[in-house]
Amino acid sequence: MKALLLAALVAGSAAQADHRLTGRDTAAGAALYAETCASCHGAELEGQPDWRSPGEDGVLPAPPHDASGHTWHHDTPLLLEYTLKGGQAALEARGVTGFKSGMPAFEETLSEDQVLDILAFIRSTWPDRVQAAQSARTHASD
Image 1 (cartoon, rainbow, N blue to C red):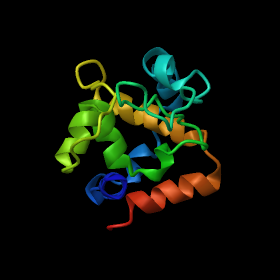
Image 2 (image 1 turned 60 degrees about the horizontal axis):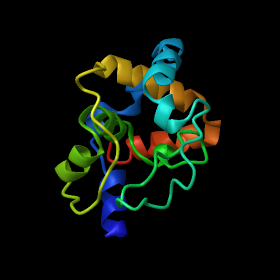
Image 3 (image 1 turned 90 degrees about the vertical axis):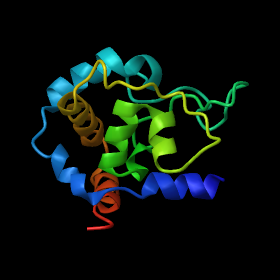
Image 4 (image 1 turned 90 degrees about the horizontal axis):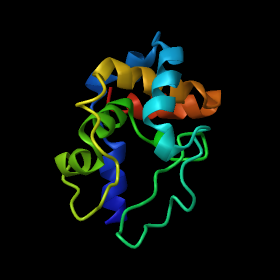
């Protein structure tokens, strides 16, 4: 199941490649992150404690978005969909069932452009090698 989940999360549509993060407003992204994401993912992008271990409800705590987490392991289109549609819907759209995601949908409160600004801000905090790895994942099927 974990292998299937990983394969589904890594696979993505290159049609919305990471060039969508180029030239984004990272200051606006930082402000939106602080307002919308930090309560779960941490003010310093550190995530919740024990984020790799599910709680009693089977849901994993919010992961870090810094380089110590796994956000950079995923392509930009998946990160965008995961944020807008919510984790459960994004996974189910890729055929992954039986996995509980605590990530809520933000499509009613954030626009696609706002989410892209947030993702660009998060990405801007990663070391160059991590940014390059995430870019490679996004462009893997180009």
